[in-house]
Image (cartoon, rainbow, N blue to C red; front, side, top):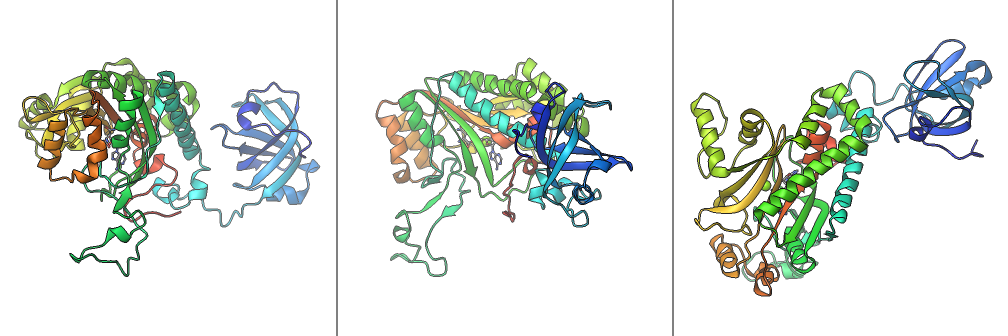
Length: 467
Ligand code: 4AD
Ligand code: MG
């Protein structure tokens, strides 16, 4: 069988008929009559299957009966023009080898339950469904597009650590990393845990963001980006939160908040454009199956200018809406951290396009953001998207040593842990900005999926770390 090279289904479907070919993959369906069997074979290279036509008389009965849904097979035969509709070519099988049978009785993907919740419990089958095949190909293509975008602009890809001793967002939502014996913790004189005995000689955690280290990169290399997993121990069981998610964090010297917004808007439009260009078949499949407005939504984001709005103005719009009878679950007033219902009202109801909200109250934002002269607001920017809410969070950074230190003290944070970061403001400080794009939030938007657990292969959420 293996005397010729295997061709992927994606390539076979673009190949002219007439050749002898070898295809390998998993059986999606088998149907037919007494004389002929039709097998739909998929190998993950594309959403489409290749049809295999088997003349039953020419095939061993034991092979034929082993070709069940889910089985893994190799097929050798002639690529011929397809008489049936739906595909240009099909394979007239001359030889079939079964690599792995699949017991039809115990097959985990019975028609009765293919809900997203159920699929999360059968990780091996989940990736073999059309839906997750499409999502994971889009995910991969988007990761590539992100690297390509920044490389084309001369950004340096910086690897920031996953294990850290500082809490970038200051929200205390970190997973601890320790090799201490939890049954027998060493104590110091105060009676608290003696972390000097721990692996790193101090208390460490998984990072919530690569930004602080990224700023060191930007203030040396000019423009950098990080792209890696981040971890948040927030007990949020929502369709938009993961405990382990991937984040893209560019950080740029000499960018002010406006340059930052321009980059973020261009970046996200570029990614959506790339998705439509490279993943059209997969997006079309998802759109036809789940979300007929998906493609229009993607196209409209590319075309429109994002609204740029001050937080204060946003609050005024929301207060007016509440006065005019819009029932928000959470109250709206100046100073409040916006809930996703508020963000979505602005984006979906009021403006009908993405919104970049700036000038947030300093008390609801992280310590590193550039303080405005009013003493109340900071140069933060959140990008709010239809269906998603916040997709990007970023800011211009506080470049003044005095102001940064004052803010750290004001928030009761430990300066000691941050000296290495504060040093960037002591030695050649510069104006700079950056933002973080939640990779899975982007994928929610691009795929139209409703739950963030369904755009990552192995979701990590509270009480759930299987596989
Ligand atoms: O707004 P956040 O917390 O900002 C930061 O971490 C900054 N250090 C970024 C920067 O300026 N370099 O997170 C950034 C983005 C959010 O807008 C959201 O898209 C995503 O990360 N995000 C999450 N995605 C999934 N699950 C979670 N629990 C998330 N928390 C944040
Ligand atoms: Mg945020």
